[in-house]
Length: 100
Image 1: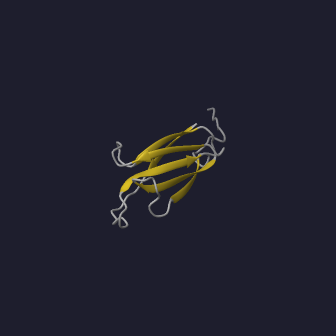
Image 2 (image 1 turned 120 degrees about the vertical axis):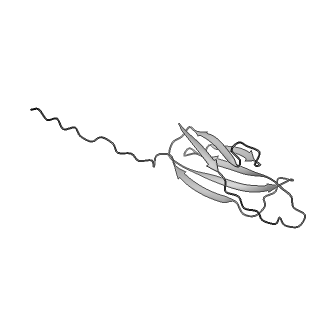
């Protein structure tokens, strides 16, 4: 199981006429296709962060979609892929013993 922390980067833009921003949906899909969602609006601590537990290790994706007060998307969603098995470390692959 992995803990996935999603931090959104934000910039100030003028909203389309008649549209009021409400929140951003963060949708995470794990390697087994199981989807978890969280809505963030900047009031979180820290701001614009969602935390997810990923039960199925491997490749997955995060989709962030800005939404208006009616729940309609504003602009295009942003998709980022991840792989919980892609982490590396320096594994021990041998031992040498010297006797004097």
